[in-house]
Image 1: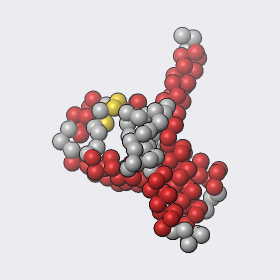
Image 2 (image 1 turned 135 degrees about the vertical axis):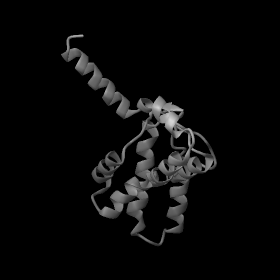
Image 3 (image 1 turned 180 degrees about the vertical axis):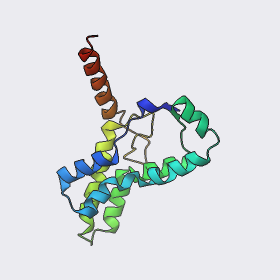
Image 4 (image 1 turned 60 degrees about the vertical axis):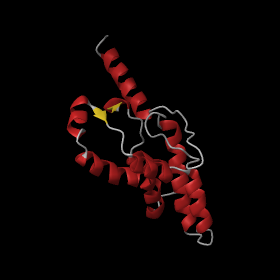
Length: 155
């Protein structure tokens, strides 16, 4: 289980901003920039509500690791091989290119911002479990705010 404050993640708003800056503001493209996280956001909370250790985990400030099926859905949605396969299947549909690029951008942005210990994207899944051991931008920002607060208080 991971502590609440050490979960390395990009939030949906950050993905929308990154996608808008890099690829434009078309609604279909922005949705595709968040879509790889949908299996997680839809399945994990439902599982967590039915998990017997959920209350204990919440009191301890930890996240239980989800079951294998949820992890596999997450890895499939965060695989550049999955994006490539979809690209091959949809190669005759030019309209799909913008959302395929947004999907790939999502994965590339997630790679350095997720620690390997907590569901880091596996861009070569299912052929490999290789993942970048990234850093948490959210943890860095919170640490910087704590330090600034300590400086302001004269500590």
